[in-house]
Length: 166
Image (spheres, rainbow, N blue to C red):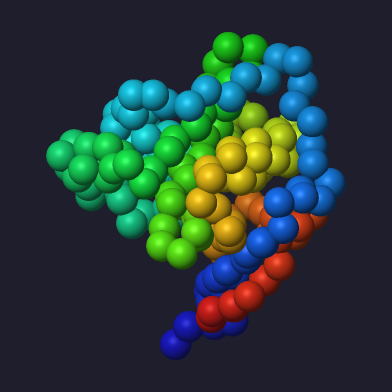
């Protein structure tokens, strides 16, 4: 029997407002780079490194070919955030039907957590998503296995919960 402490709650959040509430300015040492051309090895490496502490497991069994098929789609954009010239975190934006854009994956490498970069990276993700001409709605999901401030970070930037799953 699963206890309440073992239950994972998934929060689906959205915003249709291009105005970002409480944007977090990037420090001078921060640089955001779009992976152009896409690089499946970077997506795979960042997914594994960023997601290790948060139990991201759905892509761990992917082959190199699976990663290439995923990353080289026109609907996907990947950005990497650098601090002092070193990779600090990343996000993937996936354009979907009807003007929806999902922040498919988002996070910081462990050594950059706790430095205030989560808000910086999320602000950047939202800005890039709204730069996609067809964007009408931006959405993301997080869960209770993610960083304890993940949900707060999304809400602080203007996302609202539209669905909760247990």
